[in-house]
Length: 278
Image (cartoon, rainbow, N blue to C red; front, side, top):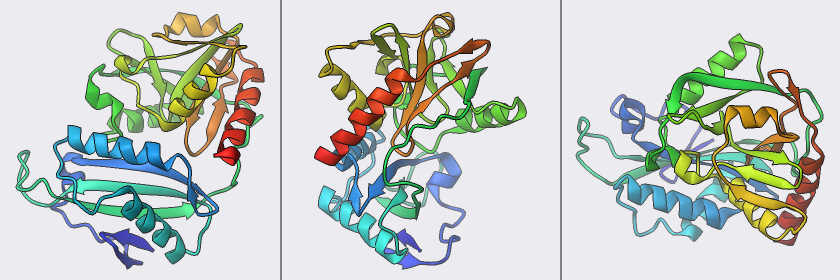
C-alpha cells in the first residue's frame, strides 16, 4: 500500500506525466529505518528534510509537523502490516510549469518495505570497491541534499556491476574521495578516523552524524573531518561505508589493498547500544 498525500492505494501508477519529480528531479527524499514502529533518528531526518525543502524554495505546509509526518509514516506501516521497515518518504513540488514551477506547494509519497533485521549487523563477506571517475560530485550545497537527482549514483552502480564490484567511490572536482554510491565513508589509520567534510560535497548523512557524535565521546579514537585522497585509502588500515539502512558496511578490498574491520565491529556495537538507550 502506498501513501499518497494521506490516501492509501495499492496502485503504483499514481503519478502522472506532469510530476515535477519525474520531469525535472524537483523532489527530495528521506530513507528511514523503522524498528518496532519506532523511526530511528527521526528528529534528525525531519530537520534535514525541512532544511532541504527551504533550500529548494519549497512551501512547507503548516501541517508538516514532526508529529504529522511520523503519524503518516506509521499509518503506512500499519497499512502494509509491518513493524520493521525500510521507508522512503518523497516530497515533490506540485504539477505545473517548465523549469519555473507554477507553485511551490508540495505533495508526498510514503512507501514501506520489510526490513531484514531489526538490529544493525556487520557483514563478514567480501566487499570490493574502486573509484568511479567518469563524472564528479560538485562541492556545492546541492550535493549535500537527498534530491532525486542521483544520475551519478545510477551510472556508478552500472559501472560497479559491469566490473564485478560491490560499490564505487565518488570523487569531487578536486579528485578527493567524497562518498560511496549509497553512503558516507570513514577511513581508519591507527587510532585516527577520518571522514570527508560536508564542504567536499558529501551527503549530509544521518548515520554519519550519529557516528560523529559517538566518536567525539570515545577517547580512544581521534576524529578528523578532512579531505581524503585515493592514495590515502591504500595506506589505511580500515575503510567502511555508513547509511541508515545497513548501518556500517566494511570494505574488505580496494584495488590490491585488503582491510580489517576491528573498528567497524566496535562502532556498530556502540551504535546499537545508542539506539537501545535512545
